[in-house]
Every structure is written in structure tokens, then in C-alpha cells.
Length: 369
Image 1 (tube, rainbow, N blue to C red):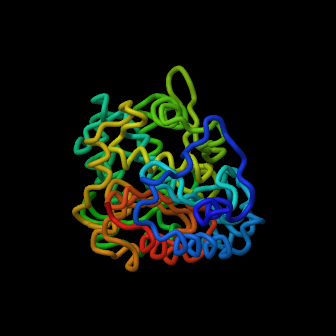
Image 2: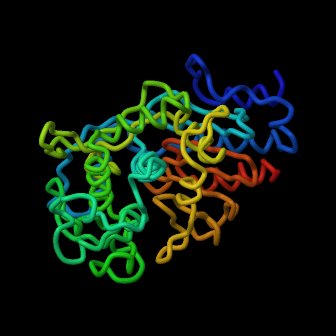
């Protein structure tokens, strides 16, 4: 067996899908790649599991700092260990674990939430700099600073919204203390990585579409991109939007209290390839290139963050990885979708510890161009 053939067999046997994507790499995809270095990188990641994920209830309980709000409101999925894919020029160079096993994506869900907003932007329903209160009559946007929150503020996490949603107040998300600028002040003046505020964005988008977001994502993004039927997007048991003619479930933007996007590494990589190709899949336009550009435009308050996508331009997100990378990441990067246009590279990884090592080693093995 050749070195290149062996790389794709690291870890457990992969189940076949019809059609399987990505295709096995040919000579063009391997051009300039250090096959042995890539082998070492994926074997190393396969050997770095995150401890405790086989009991997700106990694992998740340890992630929430405020003991008064640890109650899990959404479904949980026990973890299955490291898995992932490295894709270059649309072809698989390496895989490990089981890339077809569905896993909770944690905060990588936030980036997919922004992808789900793309069809509204492309259809002319969503103007990023329009106030949400001008479009929707939701009570969460009816008073004080909340009246001035725009769609951009919701998606780049600068809304500064304060309140309680689905029984969880904004103050209980410890990540909010890691932001820049003012906290709880005017929208657009401070940034905070806050699951409650992301859930507010999910609520607003559900109201805008008047459809559950998982349906929108499936119809407008996942199915056109050839995704499997194994993924799901889950909300809390009490997350509902009452309309005149229906009551709609609202998905969650992360997994601090359960739920969120559940997706395998192969389908996650599809989303990365879709973004890498400027919103096109197989010659078909799925999302506009304008929307992909918006996702990856640095925010005014947080320059290493776009519309819920991390930007490594100044190497502040992953200091040892290339500045050309963009990513969705969850649970400290143990769930990762990395897109590097300079290398025509997509990397999707679940439940691997030390993701910075993986990014550094894979990027060193795969040249630009």
C-alpha cells in the first residue's frame, strides 16, 4: 500500500455514503504535499481524544460556570472520539476516526447560523445594517438599546443585548467576560461570545423566515450541497415562537445547555468547501459570493471575528496557524471547521484535543497554491 493510500485509513473504518464526498485525491490534489508529515499529523490527532465525552451529561455540566443555571434544556449526544477529514482542491487527502459519525458541534453552530441567514440576505429579506425592530415585532427588541440592534450586531456578536431567553439570562454565560469594549451598552460598541445572544439571533431569524431554521438550512444550503440526511439542528424544549397560524421550534446557537447542530465531519467539510468556492457547489450557486465575503469581513469591534466566523488574519485566533485561515470552532476548537483559501484547503475535526497542533502540522504539510 502506498503512503498516500495509507493516510486515508488512519483510525476506524469509514462507512460509505452514496454519493461519497470528497473523492479520493489524485495527483493534482497531492501536488507539493508532504505525505509523511500529513500522515503524522492525522495520526497524532487521532491519538488525542477529549476525555469524558462518552458521558455528555457529565461533560456538559462541567462546562457551565454558573451552578444556578446548569439545567440542560436541549438533547444531548454522547461523543464518539476523534474524527475528521483533510480536503484539498475538493479531494480527500486524509481521514481519521469515523468522518460519518454525527457529533455535537457546540459553538461551531454559530457559524452555521450565519450561513442560514445567507438565503434571507440573497433574497433581499435581510439588510445587515437595518434595525431588527423595524422588521420584527418581537418583545426582545422593543425597549432601550435593543431597539437599535441590527442584523449585523446579532451575527457579529456585538448586540450587547441584556435579558433572559428560554430561562437563561445573558449574565450566566462566562464567556461574556472575555469580550472587548463595553458590556451591556449600546449595540455595536462591545463584543461578547454569548450563547444567550446567539439564541436571540436564532429567534429573530426564525421570525424573519417564519419557518424553523433547520428547514431553511436543509432546503437552501445542505441539500443543494449534497449533504447526508444524518445531521440535525436542535433547540431547547421550551424554545418556541408563537405565530398567528403556528408555533415554531427555535434552534439553539450552541450547546451550553444542550441542542445545537449535530453533524458529521464529512458534512461539516461540505460547508467549508461551499464557502471556499464562494457559495457555489458543483457549478450551482447556493449562496452569493457577497454573503461569503460578509461572513469573512473583520468586525469593527472584534477584527478577528466576522459574522460568527473566526478570522486568523493577525494570528490571534490560532497563533501557530496561517493567517489565511478562517474557521468555525466549538468547545475550544475540539470541534473545528478550518478553511484556508491560500491552500485550497478544508479541514473538519471532531473531538480532537490540541487542535492548534493539528492546524500547524497540516498547514506545514500542505503548501499554498
